[in-house]
Length: 331
Image (cartoon, rainbow, N blue to C red; front, side, top):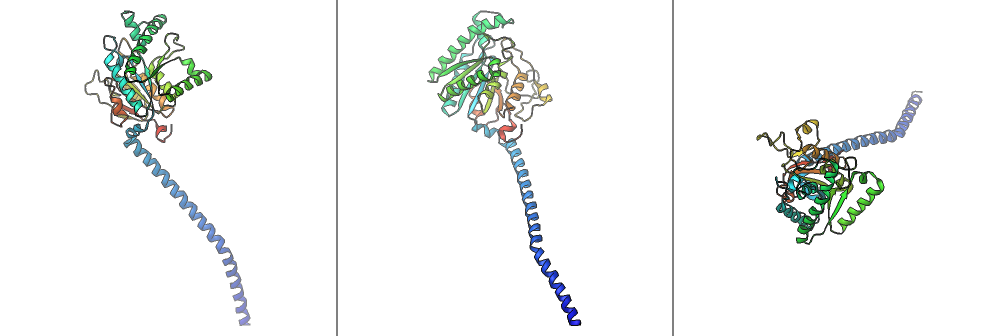
């Protein structure tokens, strides 16, 4: 009896062992899969954190370096860059600009120039005391000045065997899908043919409703229209300062800006020249438009156009507004 009892007990133990052994592999596999899944998620989390830290380091350390990789570039020059304080064209600077842009093209860059100055040139040619304030006066000055300005550009570009083309835009062109498509195709065809498009607002036919309030805004829309990588706005100031450098000699240049805040906008002033319409606030507006499409922007002095070489070589020139989406971030 004891032996039988022991046998029964042993059978029960064997049965329990058999059953437990039969279940063990499944339990083990479940535990192993759970452990693998946890480790996988942990590694993915670590990789994501590393990627975010690496992206942050890149934006802090290398956003300037990444400008070397930008291929299609919109360069905007304002009236104050193109003229002397007298309102007459600064021919030396325009010639220098033409040489720099041609050399950048030779380096493999695709260049689009957004140029102000037509109304200012027309104002001078028509011997007016100041920039016209009425619409018809602006249109007349633009009609005269644009022809003169393009002739001068062509003369200088021809010295370097570089072909240029004129494109005049109004806001309604960019708002109409079909006409916008035609404009895009024209830009892309000209660039593929090695031509530097020179863009200006079509002030001769536009009104306040059809035109652009300033060419800073126009340059941002052109950068968006042409899928450009970088917008460089050349001005009469070296970049964005923490206060007005014209009234505060202690003002400091801000080298890099990520997000444009209300505090930054409060630092911007308005145009103080009788020949131009743009100011720092319009440039910040243009930057925000460019950032919306992942396009980097730089504001720098246009006094020496060769600074464009330094900007595209990653040198700390002007103020860089690095667009988050251009560096793998979120818009």
